[in-house]
Length: 100
Image 1 (cartoon, rainbow, N blue to C red):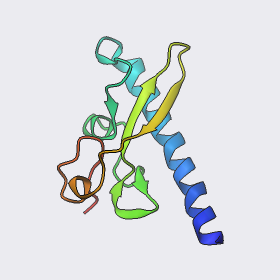
Image 2 (image 1 turned 180 degrees about the vertical axis):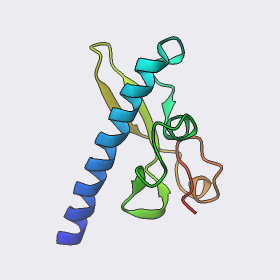
Image 3 (image 1 turned 120 degrees about the horizontal axis):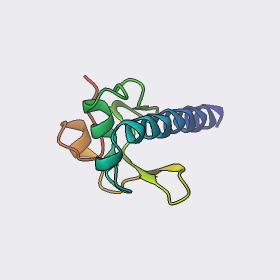
Image 4 (image 1 turned 135 degrees about the vertical axis):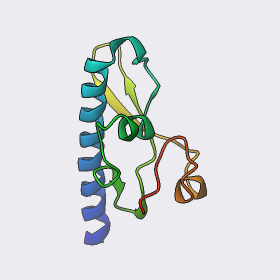
């Protein structure tokens, strides 16, 4: 349906914002920026991203769930985590944050 396509498009925009935030984070934290450690929670805690900016259009009460991978060629790619769900909703997730 058109609503699903709209939410898919919104999610792609959120992913671009998250990838850009990860790039800015790595520019400032070169020593602590390893390839798989840039989680949504890290970006929010370090103020490079807000939970609202990272909101999952399919699950309004939490952010998208995953981490950003820094690639060898210097690009950044969002990877969805498979361990999402109820832990995100309670605020205990590693790869996501609850939106209150």
